[in-house]
Structure formats: structure tokens, C-alpha cells
Image (cartoon, rainbow, N blue to C red; front, top):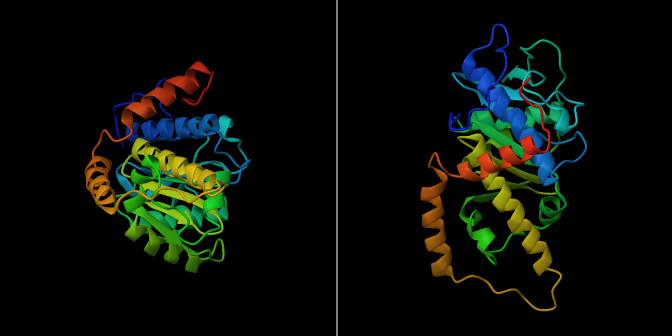
Length: 257
């Protein structure tokens, strides 16, 4: 987890490491940011973060809370077997399958985001629905993978999603929505932002009266080379993340408790 954004304020919870409390503050902030961006689906999507220094444990929202209600202490700590390690709290079974599947398959993943936005779910209805037709698509196109719709909340789906995530970090869940992962919260969020933007423009293009301009293959390759280098840096998406945290704080978000 990045320590570049100092989110911890207030009293450390008993029996909790500073690293875990910081991760909780960042993840709680992420829920408020996603709420601000309008990517919510009532209580039915979820973001998670691996606990620093505890590779087999991750944090996820307390199922039933709206995203603007999430706080650092309300997050649920779980292990990869589905056991709740924190006091109280509920988790979404399908959410556990999704996030544990990714973490078990990708040791480099420290954050996973999953949404059901109109644009993302819309493109997910089309096989290979995202085309190289926009600058935004160039940010993620080389890292996009499509995952077949499976039976939710099953071990089979957990394993299948893990296999898909080995191929790419920007996942279009067919007939479902979007998922991204990253080494940091801000990196995973930046991937999702660009993927969401690309999906929005894709749907706009499909409503026009003429075919869109496909970006030249040479330009696609150069963009992929550039983005592969950018996405693995610590600073990828960091300034955008800092700005979004400041924005939700100005709007009254209270997540450090």
C-alpha cells in the first residue's frame, strides 16, 4: 500500500497494526470516492484491499452499508477461506468469491474494484465489445481480458476468475460489469477510471450513424508499450487519487473512524 497519502487520523483501533489501519482508511476513502463518481449499485458492488504484511487476509465492505457510510472501522477483515476475522460485520458471498479468487491468483494484487455501471455493464453484453477507437481505450486496451459469466458464489467461479486475471488487470465480466486490480489502491482506481471512460465512449460510438475511426495498429502498439511502463510505477494514478480524496473530504466524507 502507498504511504504517499496520509489518511490516518484519530485513534488506532486496539489490536490492529498501523499498516492495517492505514489500509482501512485508504479503502474507506475509496468507497466514498466511488460513491462520488456515481459508480454505485445500491449495496451490490464491492472493493477490497489486501492487508499489508498479511497476504492471506483482505478487507471488504460490511454488506448492507451504502458506500458513503463506510468507515475504516466498519470494514470486514477476512481470510481466503471465507472466515471473518474482525468483530461483527457481514460480507457478500459473491463478493468474497470474486475478491479471494483474484488475490489467490495474483500475488501482486493489493486492491480489487468491481462495479456494475451502465457503461461497463453495457459493454459487457458484447463479446469483445471494447474496440481501439478512443484515447481512453488506449490507456487499458492492451490489458483488457474478457471473463465468461459463471455461476455466482461458487468455487468454480472463484477459480475461473483467478485464471482470467492472470491474463490481464482490466477485466470485462461478460453479462455483468467491470473489475480491475492493482498493486495499489490508486493504481487499481486509475485502471477502472480509464476502463469506464473507454466503455462510455464505446457505447456512444455504437449509437452514431457511421463506423468509428479505428486507431492505427502501430499507434496501438506504441500506446501499449507506454502504458505497460506507466502502470507498474508507484505514481500511476496517485495525483488523481489525492485530488479525489480531497474532493470527498470537502464534501464532508468522514471515513477515518
